[in-house]
Image 1: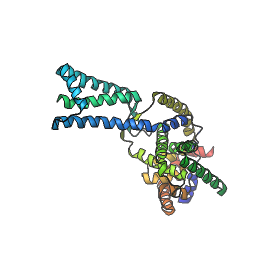
Image 2: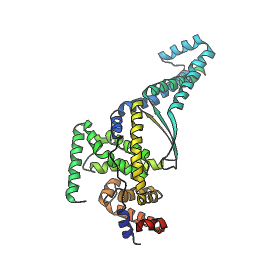
Image 3: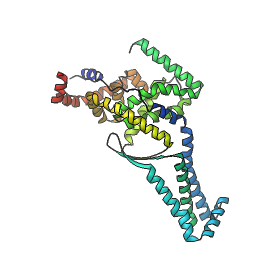
Image 4: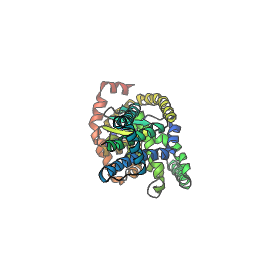
Length: 143
Length: 206
């Protein structure tokens, strides 16, 4: 069979049509509020990095910001074992609980791959952000 | 396509472009007009409702945020959207082995999306099942290299002209013609096998 004949045949194959889509309006709503959520995603990355930087500054150069001295005071008043639980284990378990409730392993439609998807509500995102920041900072604080 | 029909599409495209350039909120009109087409393109190419919804929404997200940089003189609106969707699909195929994705979604919106998508899924999957030759063609194209996949799916799954494909893929018409010719050549053996199957012969008789 010549290429042209096959091309003709392939071009004449009837294709699936798309009926009116019900999910279209929901996608559009999401599109116009995207900016707000994007800003939150940036914070999720930026704040923990900032906390790591603060922790590193304190450990390496003994330099600190006002909130660090308050945390240090709380830590000293609680004592070492309690502060480990309060600043490290509790936020860590909180983070793990949020992750467990929002992360799903999905199979690709094509069946050839898998991916992890985390759908966070804004409230969960803020909690995860705080917990992650405290955990990261505490690693330096308790070191 | 009839020239008058082509002109009408061009006029509508131009009006949508001007409206969205003047007022960004008017992009919703472009969305309403083109979302079903882009979704259809992604659905026919991937064969999966979730993947199509993901690709179509990512396409419009990129188009919405990149609209300020878009200039009509280089490419028209519909081809620009198809270009973004094609890039999204290529990325989808490249990263499909393993990936981590984090999204912040409103719980109510997510529930609404899941419910609407579940309603759509039934009708769409039924529609995909009805077209057996298409399913063969899609899986045959899926086995080819990405470069050929993009050109062949625009030609055979979207019925685009060579000029339009060239505009979408940013390649000269001659290159597109050669890509399609090479791709079709590679489909020939698969087609021969498919059409010689007894079920295919029965279908042809019917």
